[in-house]
Image (cartoon, rainbow, N blue to C red; front, top):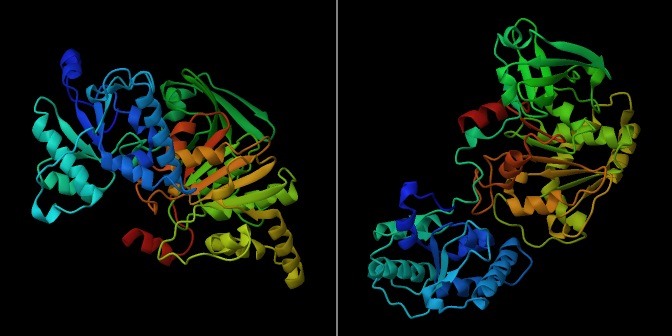
Length: 477
């Protein structure tokens, strides 16, 4: 249910059905999530005429907003076309959405004139919707009326007039991102005492496996990293789990120079965990979270180059990202798709410079040849042309994934064909897309939904390794 579950006890179901809440939807909610029509459970929704006009004004184009506006219009057309009773009495949503949507849809069928303060009495769409909420609040005395909007200022104006206003919460995966799965769990100091009594161990393919039993095993997830930092450090991956029994697999030590990846070694525990996922052929989907300078892009590119050029596991690397500017937009860009994306790929070029300097024996000519070879195997693609494509045997990197909506993330990940690995990188503290928050970002969404899948891995990188200046700035600014 959205925006927020009713606090009424279960015993008052009859009263809730007699007088359900009435939520007035702003157009930005529908353009953000067309399925929001079906996410209010037993409560009714009301759509003002201004909202329909704004949907019509925003339906043209290929942007995500335009697509959502068109999808909302199709949903509404289907619902209204099937109406048997008078529209004024409300149209049941149960047969169109999920079975949980037992409320009704009301459309504005009459001219509404509500007296607003003089300073608000303008022709703006926001103020007209607030006027509708005020009218319903004054006329529907037997039920609770609330505005649902993604626009913060609009909610503030409504509350200033004594009207209930709420954000749209259904798209949020987590209310508190501190609860987001980190992919890592520290083991207690007495772990072996409590879980190692009937332990089995064996070696296979260069790894040591431990079958342990105990209460903590029930909380493990497949491909979660566990570690002990006491007398003798222990780092492992949860390979199997069944009830109170789990199989732990030791990791490859990528902090050692002999195991370097394209000249790069892990500088801390989390980077070592990340490289174990990136180099694992059994893991098809990897998500890496972390603040600026934790090494997300560098580690991913090094792993991609190693598996593409050295091991020949993948045919090429494809890199894409959301083109959301931090400052003013620089306007239209000339050239091909790849040339248009070049200004957004500064991070790629910076990291390639670092990776190209790791081979000290090659000399200038050797490094230049390597740079050309690398560039021939890395393709830069725009998100705008991803629909309908299938990537076979590719290493797909989605950078700045925190700026993607869950729907966009689904569109991208479902492009993966056979033998393709997808890596999502991002920092949910740096979201630049309007109406997205840490809780509703597509990156948060996939981290939460994929956890525990046999072919998924996630690591939240903690320590910045860029420079002491960058680390201090991230901490104090």
